[in-house]
Image (cartoon, rainbow, N blue to C red):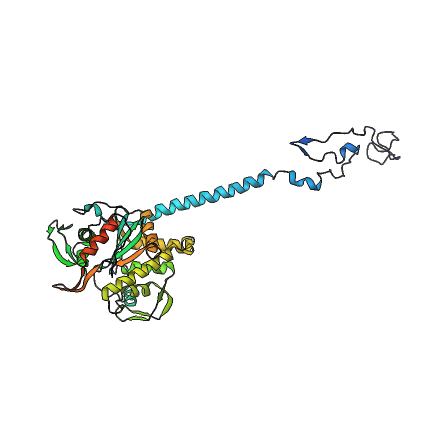
Length: 402
């Protein structure tokens, strides 16, 4: 009885009754010329053309080792890389568009500059009126004590600045709140009655009729058209600084002011929201009063712009989004302000402290003018007109506030 699998014999042959030691159909394979593809020899002569036969357990001859570089990279890997890249691009695009519409929906567009009367002609570049008020809106009792804001109701214009963004560099001009100006006649928004023109301090315009009359007064006294308006109160200002994680300021001498709560040692240090507010409100600077305070405010806004524009802020969503949210919740802007214009304003604040930028007070002739409203700041109208002409025509600023 044959115990071998079918086809095998005890003699080791193949096939029924065969005595041959090799398969009866095996033949020596003829010589096959090397296969050519694009000028490359893929090495198929490495065994087949020598008449060798290969049983099922043998290794299939591959290309010689020195020929591996001739093979193209598998298509699957390239497709996966392209898929990853396009997915990232799509995610960034959707995130960017979503962020823009989210920010745009949060803007508080409450100021109607189009309602202003007898407006100056538009000039070159873009002019922003930036206003800081003493509004306590949103502050708790504890926060009011910490920031020493007092408990006055309503809001008064505490800081006013003109920011010009143009091709000849950015210029930030502070308008002292005690500036003695003409407040032009204006139609009251609630009563509809005509408010007569009067001589008064600049911040009185805001107290009388809010942002619109303030913008109208600035345009009337400077001859410069205001393109955009941005306003922030005490609480909003502190929130923005805290969302940024603080702003670094350097002092060349100790600063102490019991009224604002400012108490800083000489040197560089990070100020939180409450400390930043104390710094920009304090009047300590060689007894310069409000003019000295405006210099401090400009210095701080430049540092704030630097902090906002840092990669550690712009590329860090855990810092960028809280900062944007705090800013958008706090800022009051004009009807035509876009997120793009608001971002441009913040970046321009950084530029005023750099090369080509200018920071200055409005030229002053008499910082202690005595009026029936108390001590006021009188502008030097000759130099002021020259400065405003340069801004209107987007020329390099050569006027000094000295």
